[in-house]
Image (tube, rainbow, N blue to C red):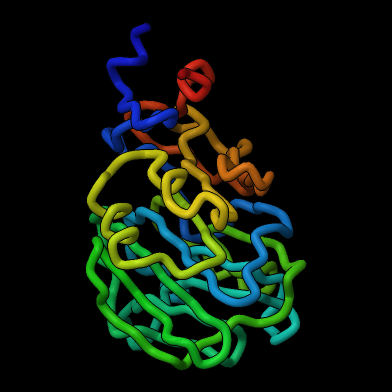
Length: 253
C-alpha cells in the first residue's frame, strides 16, 4: 500500500516522520483546545511537546493548564510562558507556588520541550531539545483533580492565550528519565510517546487530525484514556500534509 512508504514500523507500532510539522496554531487571542476533566496527576506530571512560538502578546501565554480558576482549589497544574519586562520565560506550578525558569523560548523556531513538575518540594525540571536547561524546587501541584485541561489558554478569566503552533503533545503521571527525554527530542518521529511508559501515559495528542487551514474540530487522544480535545474560537490546523496514521497501519501486524 502507498502509505507504507511514508511510515516507519517499529514492533507492532507505526510511526510517521515529522516532515511537514503538522500541528495546531493558536493566535494568542482567544482560541484553545479543551480536553475535559481527565489527565489528573496528583504527584508528578511530565509534559512533552513541540512548539513553534510566534512571539509576544504583551501578556503571559499558557501552553497547557489543568485549571478552572486562578486559586489553589481551582487548578492542578499549569505550564506557561511567563511575561516579565518584555521577556518571556518558561514557567510551571500552581496558584502562588510558581517556578519561573531562566530559559526563554526561541521565536519562530521549532523546539522540543519537556517540563516536569512534582508535588511538594521535589525537583522540577525544564528540558529543551534534549538538554536539561534548568531545575528548581519552588513549584508544586495543587488539588483540583476535576479541573478542565486546556491547551493554549489558562481559564475563562485568566485566558492568557498561547501564540504559536503545538504538535505531539503528551503527558505522563511519572517523571521521564534523561534517556527517554532525549529519545523524544532526537527521534523526530510522530507516535514516539506511545513507546515510552505507556502504562503512565495519560494523554497523547498528535494534533494532526485535520487538513491545513481547518478551524476548530476534534483532536483524538491516542493514549487510550479518552481525553480527546475540542477546538474553540478558530484554532487552526497547520501543516504541509496530514500525518494521521491510517487505521489499517495502526492495526497492521
